[in-house]
Length: 370
Picture (cartoon, rainbow, N blue to C red):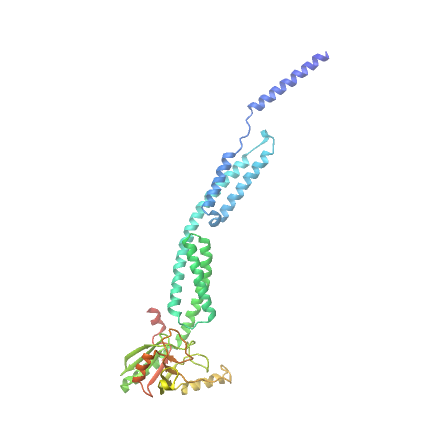
């Protein structure tokens, strides 16, 4: 009886094992999501090749997070018994990876296109600003700090242009933004300074008209010095007779205020003395009556209201002289011509010839329009 029970038990266990084995054989094993993960990885790689990590950073980051989640989910399922594995979450994350990756590619391409257009426009605008600064302010006495900002802005602009040409648009954007800040602010400062200076134009115009009228009424010579254009113009009988290029002081914008300020005065003067080469170190020279009565009165008023220190001196010895042609503004306040031009001028003027010095013979509107 005992042997019979053992036999029955053995047969039962064997049957159970065979049945279980059959179930294992015919029960479908969960298929690893290799293809889905591979396609997700390829999509992520394609997104990176399209610079989505740079130009569509958020979408690319989302795609990468989904891909990492898919890999972690796959790793968790692989730790389970083979028949208990469920790769649905892996498939879901892989699918999300592909969707986000392709969206990031589209966004990257669109953003690159938009940025390229925007940078091209900024480059053109900033190059125009650089051109205007060079054209309007190359010889204009701006502060050293402003000159440094313009120089740095131009250097950054060139770096940005190089980055743009090789397709590194993010670097180009960074350089161009820095350049824009420096150049735009410097240009605005310079232009404001120029506008403020040209507020004096109505007074200059009165002096100009008066000087030409004197030349016309006396049938004689008069001189007008246009500081902005660096020109010395000779009038005879009220008509332009000759024109010479001139060089001025380093700080020529505005009127002369005190001795040593390296400024060229503005006003109506006369030649008081003529110095030949044996009487001046500047080849030949025409001494002007600076300071005139108006200059002296303005100087005393400035001291009285505290705009100038009581120890300030008004200065003098303003001349039209030779040794010009250096190509820069270098005098201490005088007007310099080349020696040949100085010979010509010296021979036609005399003591008493009117000399008017103005900021410009043209209004700022005329200058900008031209």
